[in-house]
Amino acid sequence: MTRPSPAPTPGGLFVAFVQVALSGIGGGLPAHTRRLLGDRGWITDEDYAETFTLASLTPGPNAVNLAAVLGMRLGGVAGAVCAVGGILLPGLIVMLAVSAVTVGQGAALPGWVQGALRGAACAAVAVMLTAALPVLRVGVNVRGGVVVAALTFLALGVLRLDLLPVLLAAVGVGLLIHRPRAASGTGAAGVPDA
Image (cartoon, helix red, strand yellow):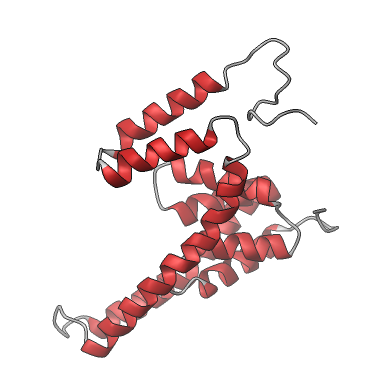
């Protein structure tokens, strides 16, 4: 996929990430980010997978990290600032408004609101899967990717081990598998050279 001309401006990134935030009701901001920026030709699935992985491995909310990294890649420091501002602004306004209305109403939300939130949570699972699938497609083509992913799922999802040691172990295994080799015939990501 080729990038459009001209390249995205910081203002364009701000508007794009406001749209991402507004369409992210129910969760799935990374999925909306991939779809919106991909539709504009600003990122490829490979760019998205690389950036999503980096954003997921850094502290803080994934969506904000993703906006910062994508904004930096597409528009430099100004792009990163505008992307983060764009993705935070709608939620900030809505949460301030909801807080102003609900303060003093008691701790429990009305039953119909709780029901709506449960439905939205189910939809959020499906939206998150649409964000994960491109990363999975890239991951299965990386040497050892399926094994590392399966072991990580086993450690986190089945054995319920702590995230940080599992993450450090996975990174160590990845470094070991992809250590530089002379005349190995593979690229840095373990994908065979064309």
